[in-house]
View 1 (cartoon, rainbow, N blue to C red):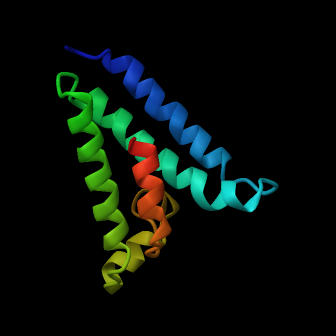
View 2 (view 1 turned 135 degrees about the vertical axis):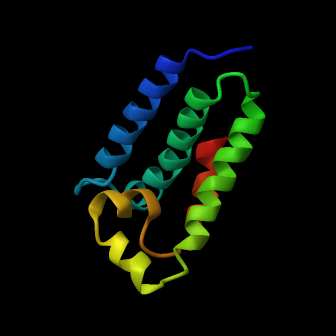
Length: 112
């Protein structure tokens, strides 16, 4: 079993675009609060599929979910150097800014 790397990379980029679009004003509150977080885990799954084309889908989903959860839990940690990094918009999009427990469920949906 092997995946088409360009397809998965393209899907990851499209998922990023959808996630950013979900943060635009005008959406219902639930879209703004939850959809982007679910798409974050989906994006992680697509990147993992692109990087590791021979790994079974369940293992990719578990690895993506674990990565998202670790990043979320890291948001409860606020050393000055990390908060300074998070001031950069790109870094904040990847690492987030603050722990939100509901994001953990959103990641389960996205990785599923």
